Image (cartoon, rainbow, N blue to C red):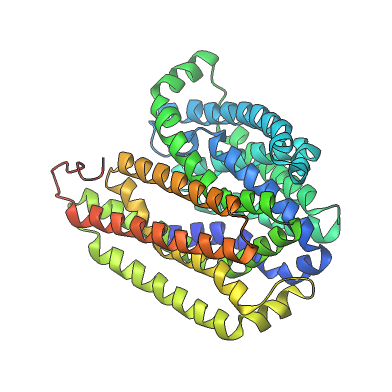
Amino acid sequence: MFKATFILGIGMGLGPLIQWLATPWLARAYAPDVFGQLATFIAISVVISSLSCMRHDAAILVVQDSEVDATAQLALCYALVVAIIGGALVTFFAPQIFGEKYSVLAENRVQLILSIVGAATVLIGAALSMRYENYTISALLRVIQGTMYVLLALSVMDGLINAWSTAWVIAGVVSLAYLIINRRICKARQLLNQAVILKDYLFKLTPTFFLDSLALALPILFININYSLAELGSYFQVSKLIGAPIMLVSALIGQIFFQKSGKYYRSNQSSLGLFKICIFILASLAIILLITIIFFGHYLADLILGEGWRTETIYLVMISIPILFKAIFSPITTVFLTHGRIKALAFWQLIYFVLTLIILITATLLKTSFETFLIIYAVSEVFLYSIYGLMAFKVIQDTKFGVKNESIYL
């Protein structure tokens, strides 16, 4: 189990780590406003990608062996339809509704669609390889995009968006080759039957996942509407620079917590001790990182990013606080899944999305400065993620093994 978790952790972390290590060169090769355009492109791509497979990539891990091929192909069909229709609609309407700064989507319509398809294909390939415990394959599929993005951005120098989308195409082609080699083609009737069997993934899990992705994209989308592309680009780069180290650790701990918490629950054991250990480790790392930012952040950011970027200490702190709270609480909230509290999770994500949207709209209507916007967002994230962590704690604390006890959360 530890070996598998370690390999998957490398797969999840190596791509972002390579991008993080390449930051000094990328930040000097491209101006902040170019990163602002990339941030908008990625945010929209991720939101549409959250719909692409209709969560059938997750279903690959749990369906019967006889249903795996149909599930994988159904996920790929959904991805193609969502990418083409979603990409076309967004790139047509977003510039008309939100203004000229969203014209970057219309200018890169094909790249957006290809990015979504590539990302979806990698999700399917990674899920399939995990089902059959080919963890090295799963890790490699996840690493390709981040690695190729850096190589293309620094060598071809044809723009960050082209580098990003081309990297997803390359990763998608490799993943598709893996799918073709290992799976057989199913008939249309089989796909239709499987669609009916997995309808809950389409109608219950997909909206929840979509809201979560959209909520995470909201700050980027609102910054693009209200402030300059240079400010957005600086926010995007600084967020990645600060967040990458702790989010990588957070993702790895989250994977371990998810596996062990599920095992404990199936064995009628409490996950409370594991919960406390994970929180302690992540909170300790967050405190260390925050102290480092306060005392050395400005100098390190200047050294890494170079000229033309915002690196003042208070600015770094305002951006880091929401990231740190997400890193602490996000991994342990998988307890909602391991303890069968899907409805509670869906309810929370709806509330989180609505409240975040209201807060950001209010900041927009008040025409706040960029600094005030960041403070408002940081305070809201601290409050909302603290509640999220408390809810996860209550799920573990109130679980009575062998008895369904969901009334508090439904």
